[in-house]
Length: 189
Image (cartoon, rainbow, N blue to C red; front, side):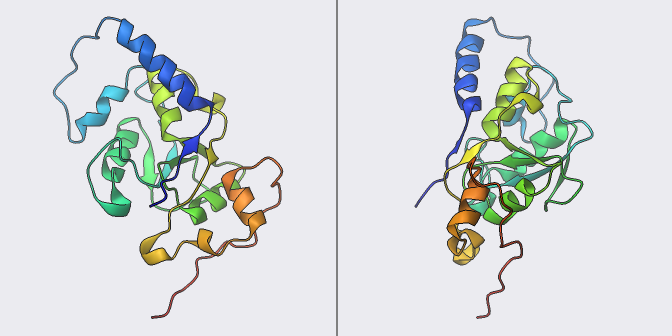
């Protein structure tokens, strides 16, 4: 199975921050954990970093655990975003501020988000970095996507996308034109 990798300078910064964090004394214990508390350990700086923002999730979040298949870690990622003040919706729209990318992101959501000037793509590792070192989400470079989800039963638009559309969705610098595929295909069985 081909696993997607979301890359960018954010991953290297996160590794560096993790190393620095290990050397610091532990913070005082927090209040009793809430549901999905595994991800609360990420919040070390601004707990309202996503306040007033609309976030859409795409991909899977295996580092958070919970769920199976294409929902792996999504409930916990959603809970984390909501605790950080975000409104989490299921589809990219003109009101979407961030598309949070997990592993194996969806081609259609990524393509739509890239075609909208207001919506920024944000890798999960970039969110972790911002939470641990207090950096701004707007300072993070857009992540580069290596591959996409095959979708439910292989219905991903990535499977039939042109080379130009694929380069645009992956964020390659030479792919400036908007893709030709915007709508989901309908499969008739």
